[in-house]
Image (tube, rainbow, N blue to C red; front, side):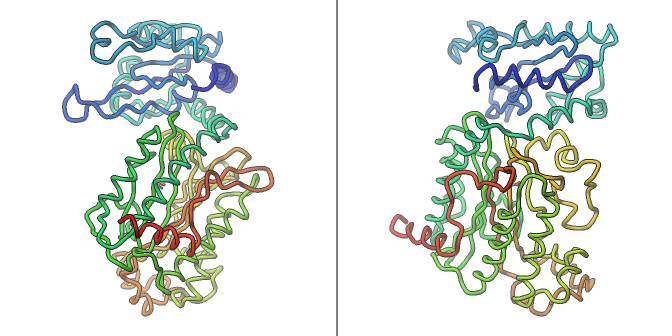
Length: 467
Ligand code: GLY
């Protein structure tokens, strides 16, 4: 945990941003995996972690906006728990670490909320993304579980995002620690990118490095020679010389701050000329966005900058044609780059996405586009000092999408469908870094992970002796 003053200050700021009533912030509960006593590895809710810092399950946090009093409702371990799990800190121990003034058994939360409701007080709560939380809120609030997310507090959502979106130096240190674990995951994957290795072996090794580093993976590792499938979670292939191996992976720090990095390695250690052209196009887009990202710049503008660079390079290769400004304005590049440039990152790898993607990445000035490709941009609004963003442009050759667009002659004034046939089985390339926005520029966080063609080849080749 951070120092208790951090949590006290965060709760005070939250209180100042909400006008009136009770803030109800349930932590997560244990969830059964395949039978009740065999549970998923516990992961605390990120907003609960942010304001209360406690990683244990089955605790409810409450803040009374009008009095400033704060509460944690949870049960201390009893002798049965101690026999199986050992002696764990009590609620009072947790309260001494996060500065919460009042603690009580979990069952008291229901009476507390019931009384507040009977007094006509507003109860603010956030959207629930787990069924268990919806059921818990149903019991506390007397609102049907399937209606919970229709009754959330927009005022609280906006207040939480306003605080969580700007990272302080302690959070940045945590994020950098998790990127250093990602460094080990990715350089190990590069070294293992040798013919005869299996995706499963590399996938498992990467997940193990994350766990050994102190936290879990920040999302299930994406590791595939079929990088054209954006989030490919199948690991059934054996690597062949000349293939491209895409690894999109990150870890959580011991305090659950995330990393999210993508690298692509040539299996066997040498990119072909064709692969180099596409790789360099993606790298140029990644580097130009990093050069131009700073406080005050809209991320939508950065997305369009990356799209323009990709379209220009594809035109030079002969896969696109015509006026590039027009091609990007019409969304023709999205055949190759069908996703957004990136997202916020913090305690969640897609930070705060559970509170609503549009609340996080859009506002009155930036409305979500309906255009294919641009519609998937998670973050469009202006960057601010303290935001942590992923920068993850990519180029993909998705045979099924190519066939549909080609049959429709879609954007045929901008796409050279004949030449595209030579690329059907190319796969996909994405290059992703995590950046901290500063006043006049941005900083690529963590230990640099090889990303130039030469550095990636060198890292792959350094692994040959070990395989
Ligand atoms: N890098 C994985 C994701 O953004 O979902």
